[in-house]
Length: 401
Image (cartoon, rainbow, N blue to C red; front, top):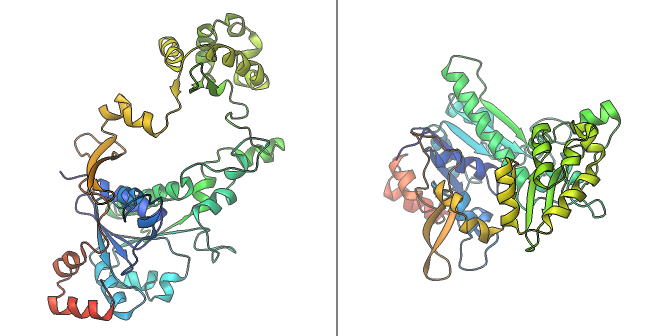
């Protein structure tokens, strides 16, 4: 199968999450993504959350559909190989600290000289400019600096985090958007934007909605509110009789009335003080107490059946096992099974499917994250025309493995 990005080549120079996440999206939709890894070591994701075997499922997921090539970018020979790959690429992804590529002789000027038509996407903690540009910055730091950590968690607890690398991943999404916008602008004869600058903290801050406007307009500093959002009521996570939890979104005006009737509280549905979001926000504790009183006496399946009939947005709080068994995930091809060697023997493992759905030009999980350097010879010989003798010499020199 071919995807909408078939014919696009992406050179991925980054490590960890942000740039590799962007590269995975390109690869899922047909782009030829060539991931450059250090010989003998590779991307550290290969060992993250590794519970058995030699290669993590995180790497198998984020590295999927890519070709792995080992090149030591610290060497002159490695630099020349990288520039040769740049000449044959449409997009270059990197997420090193600002100045790193420049020290290697692979800065924007050198890359543009090799390929003026290439789009360079640079992901870093604080961006390529500004007083903090030179600081090291991982996604977790960006989540704190961007305001997300402060408002996440229980009011009585220290700032918390989402249980995923949300800062890195949203930066990866912006990286893909920026690259595609630059390519589209060039194709249409519009402004040329050869460098896309994505700061991790800015990607996080972009998700914070009216955090600062509320501070300026009302003098309000948002605090941690647990499972609810201030001023958005009723909306939250509610306990059920069987020990499970359900998320209910009853904060829209029309939905609120339906929810109150569904939980046998027509008096609240008819209360004029609760007719809009402001009034409901002032009485959110009262509304949440009423909802808990109803959900706590019913199983999650009973709650969902009633609310579905009433047209109220609601859903179970799924863990991994529930997701793996959910028929909707299967129907939407969001669970893709592949045979994986986990600890000496192959076994079926379900991996996330492709997002978004593009009818007529779907993406595809063609292969999982490859072994380190699995495609080195294929790419260097097949794409760059490097001879077998030269490949052997580069291996002896430690430039590739």
